[in-house]
Image (cartoon, rainbow, N blue to C red; front, side):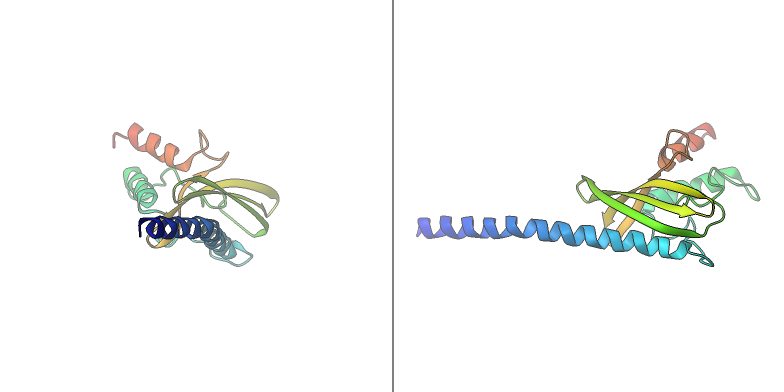
Length: 162
């Protein structure tokens, strides 16, 4: 009886371990669809996704972006004076290339490269798997002092006394 239980537990563990790569692949595939879906909005005549989309950004990054804009005051522009997902104000993105790598539990980094108007752009999107699906939790780009949107927003808010 005990031997049967040990064998059953061993088989179940082996099956679960064998399923893990398939689950990881599904998570990665979903993340790739998420990122490609974002950049589909940046083609010629697209509208982008803006900086207030709950379907794109994590709640904590949205809160930082909103706090920065509020700290700037009415009629003023906060730290973000363009679109962080394209590091631009105007866009006509094409030739999107994407590479994903794990960066922690429920986290991936998407290295996104594309051509926008007259320049090549490279960004790293830090993705977090939330109950609602994949969301952008940070953007790393040469356009942000120190490279990170989140860190730049935190510095800006701290400097403003928030």
